[in-house]
Length: 282
Image (cartoon, rainbow, N blue to C red; front, side):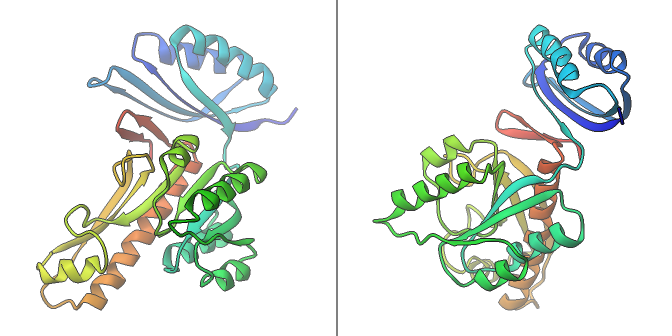
């Protein structure tokens, strides 16, 4: 039987013996550890670990052994194949930069996702999805049809076995019910001016205030608007000489980079939720 490259990500209450127990199970099943990272959070008392291992042992047999260890240490864990494309649904509105970037990276830069569809509340981006061969779903959203639209979204998620939803500048707020059902599997991107500059034309508001740093934040979506656990952030300096259009262009560049990193790290099982924040084994 040929060896498989697997990745194990786990969290549990911190106590002695965790690393020994995990490495012991992997060794007993002929595992060769190729990458290992760990972190103990003294503020929460939780332990986090990510291990990549090559083994020829049957996966079911290894999972059975890990289940026994997980029970002993009260672990939350997941075992997957390294590099397996995660079935992903991308949601957008009218701005194309994040959508185009993700589709490009998925096709040409080995971003480990399989885009099973693009959902948008406007039809503007259909040609982009079609160019990259991604099924396009136009689901309009109004105050009166929001419940129906979200029901259509969840139906699509279930039918396509979606594992990850990416809000690539999707300008609609997901309801608490949707956030709850998809908890830990929805990533959002937004500019770094929140909560100072809300609403329309945030870059113009920032320009008027003489902001010197622009940036972006990628985070998991929760019922608390834009307050989910942060995965990645980045910034770029601007000056008084930069016009609003230049600030927007730079901001979009940062948004693309930050979102792509967050999606890659999630798909590679490098992100573990630690209460209101995350542990990222980048």
